[in-house]
Length: 314
Image (cartoon, rainbow, N blue to C red; front, side, top):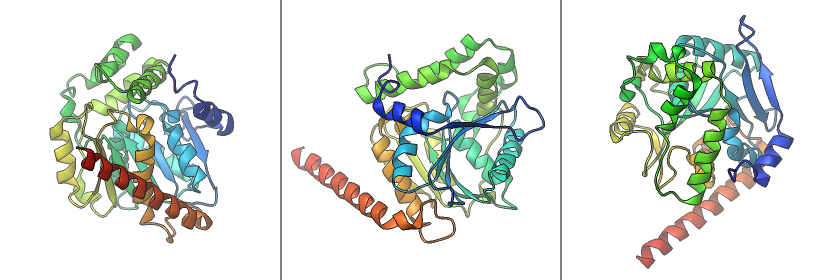
């Protein structure tokens, strides 16, 4: 039994934040599932987009922490969409339904790629205020699967799960990372054949981001230095694509740092969102800003002290 699934934090999250289901397409089978937490007065919230294997609740630690500091946060789970244009059109309709003009997007892996594609899709009438791209990529050809992208819909669920699990870390891991992988495996088990097949199709369908269309959007690139599904070349490509992006490097964290290194990830998210405080694009309740900034400074101080101690002890 995975530790996260039975943890007090996860159970508290499930019992206090309701899961909503919304249909915005003519096709009733396309259902968006989402958690919307924090002050409704915020019109430019932070929206989380999960990886291929993820559901909306993989970001529960971000939702709990950030709403506690006064942010409005929405975590999503996609309906079954088979191409990027269809996804972008559906996501735009969802934002219209939620009456959100502009949003900040945090995308993990596939979620980060879709966030970039959506920013590109809406560049003439911008809907994306900023991007946080976690272990993400800008070109699907890095997976060398573009030739199989059109056949995922034919494959049985067990085969699709095997493909996804092949990217999960193996070998010795620290307890937090092992718990994170257990939780993601559990989430993967909850996805049906069409959900998995459509996400793998989006992940591998031949496509790349056109940077000139989104170059004015503030970006933070978040990645890890230990084992993850992303190659060094893919990371370097992201740095080249966004030369002015802030970089948030985590020493460890694997594929799912938002689960196993949540305190660091939450800190980097806050630092990214600080630049919008006091503007109409703030994702935080203005009355909570000073307390939240104090908390960030305390964590920063604590982190730098820890790093100094590590250096001194070496």
